[in-house]
Length: 233
Image (cartoon, rainbow, N blue to C red; front, side):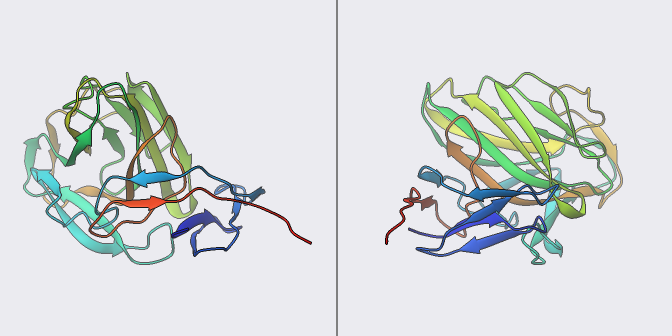
């Protein structure tokens, strides 16, 4: 029930409606992974791909909508960029309700622009840990989160994920920003020219120890019901 997504043989994210099987593929090799069967998950971020909306709060940065082609083949990926020349902390965040002791996974699709190192750094309610992602090599950088992955998609895109256990019942901050090097610590002052940045699409926060398939949202949280597979006849 609801809209589900899967990866086709070309590595493109596709959408399937109710009662349509999802045959998934490896986004890098195109290898068939068979029928995708997932548990129910809810994406808690109300705007998964429109970072110009008010729920996303920028710091020393701005979001420009629909700049390049996204992993689903539409021109809906936004650019997050420095709003002035100079050295400043630069990030964007979404605050959402979290519960102490619950495991959450935050994910987002990222593509390098002038900035080539990306960081996910959940703060309030998450013990202020962080994880760096090298968008030039597709490798994890330094970090101290409970778990992290980086997965290559076509056209220079990567899906970056971070898993952490909440340490407070609070309005948790889902922070994503720029750092200088894969070995950098938490988001710190970075010298950039105005307009320098990178591209984001498909942000997601879900309860669970791993990221599931992308759940699009546009103004509200969205729940993808569990897959129920059967053969008759």
